[in-house]
Length: 444
Ligand SMILES: Nc1ncnc2c1ncn2[C@@H]1O[C@H](COP(=O)(O)OP(=O)(O)OP(=O)(O)O)[C@@H](O)[C@H]1O
Ligand SMILES: [Mg+2]
Image (cartoon, rainbow, N blue to C red; front, top):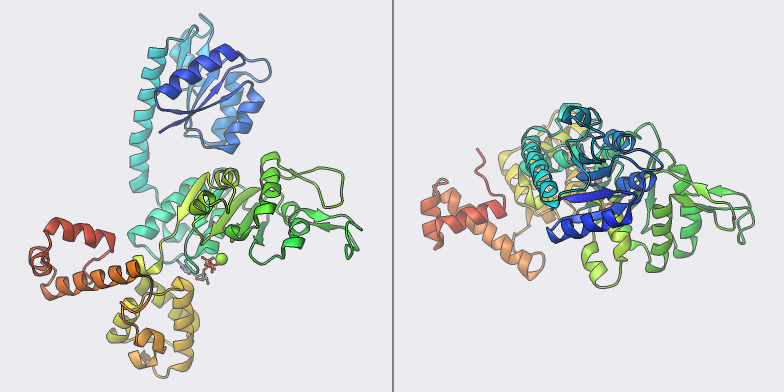
């Protein structure tokens, strides 16, 4: 559902519009002046703003111009006093999609909102297909052009230019840090620093000083002034890695800094403004952690304005061959390849450590192997002797068995789905569903 921001200095008008639009199922927030509106707008991605044209501090069209600078695709309806703006053309010049005169006719308003909503849906669909990032335009190399990675790249393309925080989720070694660096490099603050904080690696008692810095003499051992990560990230990106490890009692402190965009050093009085773009990463299920009371919900929502999930490598096996070639080139001084049997063995492996594990396996194999063709015997034993059903939880094992059975049946019947389904005793529809679920495609 669309997120709408209502900006009006009259409380009654705000409440009226808000009540009405909420009842129609929209997510609605309000602001009572231009300044507050811009602040809200930087905190959350609103798709539509309803703006009073005449306000005491900043006029509606100035507010809109500034919002458009942040997000050119935001929709806008301007509310004008009767007779002040007489042609739609004038309103369009202000960058609004449409306008309404006071007193606002709610039915007309809803109608206009729905029209804008529809138009947005159409453009978003068009953008989904065409607007992905192509390998050539990337400032860092991200290998993999399977459907799953394409989707990740298309999301990155859309979120990188915005000021909003992004939560990057994925198992260990899936490339979360790589993606964070890419977002930074594609963002408007790419010239600024990329500052990383590993929330899992800092002892609890040093955390505050690490993040916010400290004044000389703030505590024993604080022999000199020290700037914290927040200050170091000023004008750039702050990457909060392993955010799920952040102790509960420190979470309000981080939240406050993010909300107020100001910090003070430990032992210091003065408040220091810090504008930073925040990216966070985790391999934990933060949503579940909030339900269990182990992660603050308000902080979760603050970090998770956008959410990018990188699927584990075993769910995007189509990327494995390209990654193998990439790492072979990276680690081998001589031209080497894997023979087909070794390649198959690698592709079948589950990679609990994801891309990082694959990278290490290739590095090790290249170093130890001889000759220009690497064989199954050169692979580490955990890969060679891996049986799909021997690792993981009950669900994972069952899924692995299911995937294996479906794959073999398809291979046996040369990818004729009717026959494979029949041999498995399931309908073709179920087979297609499972193929999609397990990302099974014929490999030529
Ligand atoms: N798509 C990819 N293309 C090329 N290299 C990749 C890709 N994904 C990951 N890598 C490489 O794999 C290694 C692990 O990636 P990264 O450190 O970003 O993972 P991570 O998700 O942050 O892991 P962890 O949760 O353990 O911190 C890095 O060397 C990275 O460059
Ligand atoms: Mg990492």
